[in-house]
Length: 427
Ligand code: HAM
Image 1 (cartoon, helix red, strand yellow):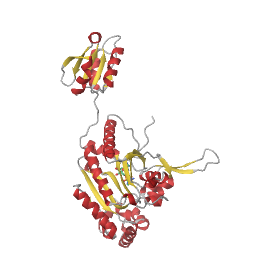
Image 2 (cartoon, helix red, strand yellow):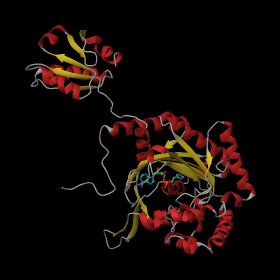
Image 3 (cartoon, helix red, strand yellow):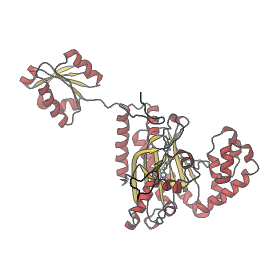
């Protein structure tokens, strides 16, 4: 038997009802904040990710699905392609490619789609997973650098999670400063690590050389006491970065968004500057980040684009669904009516009636004239229908239908024209 590949999974009903409900709500909230959808390709030139996410990150160094794409004709070049491990790089590439900066305004772009990372699969961690993300990006003259963007984005996320119905979330906030701050912080980290790094895990020993900031990401228990004593990034911010972060915090406090500072949160991607954040949830176990994001002021330039500061986030949709389910959210959307033809020749009448109901906005399932009444009732219950509508010879002749409320057991006769209202209102 051929099965779904390790780390991938089918999303099936009733869960997909919940996925769709969440996506509809998200689109609704994002529209209210004037975001518009962008759809970028699922695969891109490998360099896009190595130059933006960073060579030294786990994502680029170990987790990408990359292949050499041979040209179809001899004149076509072989190209290294990669399934997108995240979507920010693709959005910024599109921003540059379509010369969005010429518009002079902020671009507020969102996406919903599959991402791919060859991680070790576990609960909340898949090799194909789904992100709902958004980016605010534009020239500095449009206000893209302002701490007001950070605060507006974080306020929007708090609203979005509230409206989706997630309760127990926590916002963790940090600033990783600008490139110069990080250079100074990296020097300080290297100095602090030098006398102790030999006691740490092999990954940390390597990172201490190549990218000491990543040491803070280490989850190995024995390394934690050493990491706790390392210098803290917020002490290394220059004045403009310090002021920017203070302004973000003041605005969050003014609108009443609770947060906690987590100076060890460096995030798994290299493009970040200044504000970084994660929203975590207790129902998720080890993979506790429902979403992550931050500011990336130099990213466009590093991809040969114009100066285009930006900030964005990506929700792990798989994890958002798990978190909602851990709070007792259930999925199934119930069908309102089960239309049951009773006796030979009744299929066509039932089809006509079901058509009328559906066109009037009632969700309806349709049975078959070969089913006996008992079987129709069983199927209606299995379908989770609230009502069963019997379509027999008498009903067709009188245009009055026997309608049974499967919840209360009550049965009434309802005229054809009154049916949609009856089935809708009683639901
Ligand atoms: P990220 O932190 O790598 O950031 O991913 C964002 C979220 O995607 C995570 O918090 C998690 O919920 C989910 N996620 C990541 N990997 C997996 C996985 N293997 N299985 C299930 N869920 C996963 C980014 O991707 C950035 N592009 C976010 C961003 C947008 N920053 C600025 N703009």
